[in-house]
Amino acid sequence: MVTQGFALFDTLIGRCGLAWGARGLIGVQLPESAPGAAWARLRRRFPDAVETEPTPEAEAVIARVRELLAGARDDLSDIRLDVEGQPAFNLRVYAIARAIAPGEVSTYGEVARALGQPGAARAVGKALGDNPWPIVVPCHRVLAASGGMGGFSASGGAETKARLLTLEKARTSPAPTLFDLEFSVAPSRTGQ
Image (tube, rainbow, N blue to C red; front, side, top):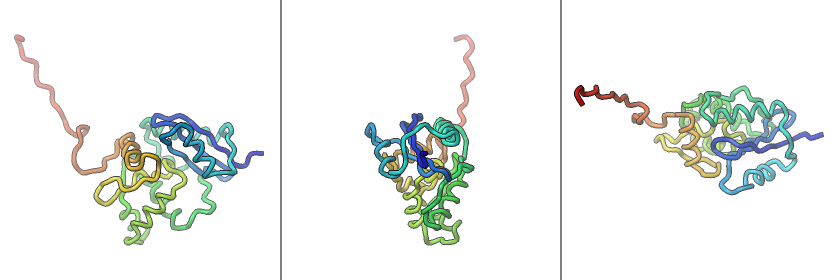
């Protein structure tokens, strides 16, 4: 009997992967730049996982991730995670990150303050960099204090992070975007 499995699936941003076990999701893999690299990374990260058809629970997660990456507003916060082996500090950071709704953002410092550790912004960044469940634990929604992307450990780095935020229509700056501006249409001229 397979105790851990994984599967790759296509999304609007590329080929992603999901790994699961009896206690829930053990990992999510974002797309890689080279063909086959997502598969290889999943094999390295989860050597006991066997490539197989998704369980019904995993299939439901795959469908929700696809929808989120296509612009749906799903926070994925009810997805069961297998947290065995995760440091307590990281789990606290992940819980705060999971509470950030699609289209919203926070900063490393704000997450640190929410933890009651206002000087721990770097530790928050490290915990998010170690996040085994990107998208489900939305580390991409946590930015630098300046509003910049900060780091992102997935392939493509900050560019991938910005792309995910764009898909969610997240506001990363107080400056208005073209989507915020109201345009009027000039009245038609008679006789022309």
